[in-house]
Image (cartoon, rainbow, N blue to C red):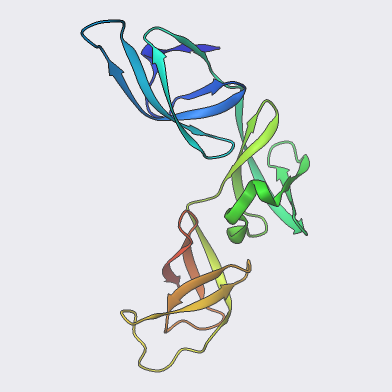
Length: 187
């Protein structure tokens, strides 16, 4: 399929030189002399790199063959992560480098969205928030308040998160997977 520059909008996915991109910003420009053109900022869905690209008005671009599948995370061995398609029960593996820091928030049986380009996995989208149990931290001290300082805490997925001083081992906390920040204690 193709898209014209008239179809450009934020969030539109296009393909350049075999790589899928998403339009993060665009501007239609009509100079006094010469033809109109469109300036865009494109973010690679594979590498995350952002590039600037200019297109002539009316130019056609390819749209990528993308598919999102809901997958359930099963377990990991070394640097290999195992997932199962929630619809077909087919299992497959992903290399840790594709997950990056997102692997810090993967819990067994959590459902994630995996983006495929031409049948190859290129990205993983975690739920926005996960609930994790603190497995190691310094004990809280009586009198520590929520408005006080923070301390490092290791959670069940091996990630280290800064938490308020009053939290103890065994407490369950809500974490934002986009930033890796503590949100609240779960009761």
